[in-house]
Image (cartoon, rainbow, N blue to C red):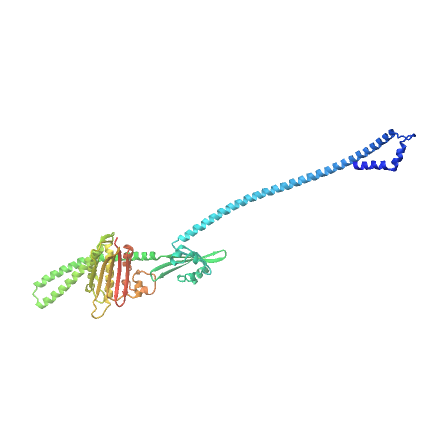
Length: 480
């Protein structure tokens, strides 16, 4: 504005009109009338100042309007900033709440994951520690579970088994694909009992599973061999105990009339000598009486042995001389054993090979006597089947100490045991198998003898045999 006023002033001074005005301020004598100049300049200046004031007033008004506009803009901006700040604060608050919720969810997820991991580990430990063989299968037969018991029985590690087909990696399993398929189709558990040659007994249970649309099965294989054998042995033991009680009762019942018969025979012999009979007739009757007395004495000895055997059953282990047990068993066998072929055990030649200074061993005397009597009965049957001319039935008994065991061998030269018969020789009388095992004569089996040696005395009983040579029974008993 000042620049414009100065420009106007210079314009007036330099303008021709200003020159005329200058002449106006001169006096007649040519001198300048400065009073007029001053008054005129003051008026011009006042005019200019008035213009300037008006201009400044308008400028101030414009500035005021501009300031008001700027203030409105500032307030609007401040309001916008406040609104945006409030929005951001709300967003931050919501984000903070979301973060807190997320942290809670994460913590809960971690806790759930830890619990799930612990549960999985616990279940895995349970499955691994199970005494049963556990196998998990998909519908196509791929293995999904394979516990420690399965590793022990099959010898196949879990890492090698998982993901592979069951029947390819373990082809000897006694389970077919059709049985698994049947359980899956029927959607109910299927139990299969399997026995192998009477020596192994398994309960196989198939449980069908269905999870997330995928079918599968869990197979549990329980080895119940010991349970079944123990149950059968208990049945046999009860049977043998009942038979022993029956034999003892019969022996008690037979003993008095037999004693009376022998007394009557002696009285009859005395009466016969006093009678007046021909010598030939008296000799014939006397011979018959001697034979009858001899048979009666033998029957009495059998009864006495049965009574002694029945009375000695049970009790606890005690130190005993095995040689004495064997000799008493031989004496009892001489009295009671015979076979349909007519061979009696007393007619068999006994060869004894006993080592010197044999120690006594802790044992159940009556049970060991029963074992030896069973072996002698088995030998008597085998020797009675030999019909060769000049054949001498022989039973060789050898007793010796080897390391920390007492070794006993009972050998005979009768008809040997075939390989098939050897498979059933130590089986129980009561077997769940079918086929040849049921046809094998239960009287020839030595299952109870095997139980007495292996279970009651923690020893071993085995057999080696050749059909044309004979059979040897091997017994090992611990010395302590």
